[in-house]
Length: 129
Image 1 (cartoon, rainbow, N blue to C red):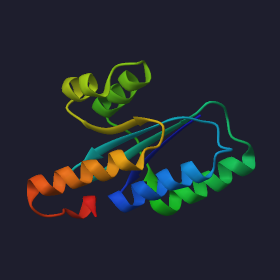
Image 2 (image 1 turned 90 degrees about the vertical axis):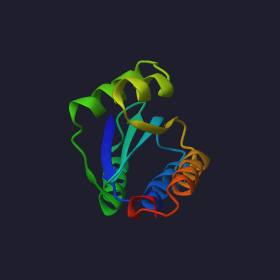
Image 3 (image 1 turned 60 degrees about the horizontal axis):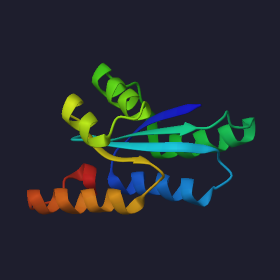
């Protein structure tokens, strides 16, 4: 079971990571985080379907933070590449997307990305707040 959402900023992305880390009963297979100029795309893949209660709780949480996302072909291909074992670096080069994290939820990768991006720009854009 896959969930694909668009989030407005880093704070919301970190909340999703915290939620997934604090709900270890969810059968999480991997989390993919892609940064775009106007926000973040998050793909959450589960090992198996969630129970109706888990699904309802999870989608309610995700709908509070973001909106379900329909990826364009470039993002679809990037997500497929990651899922089939291509390295994040090769996916970034091939599809020109910023893969921030792929695999287990990792707060440090998102925070490091934000820090480096802001340092390079000299200011913090709204999507990185």
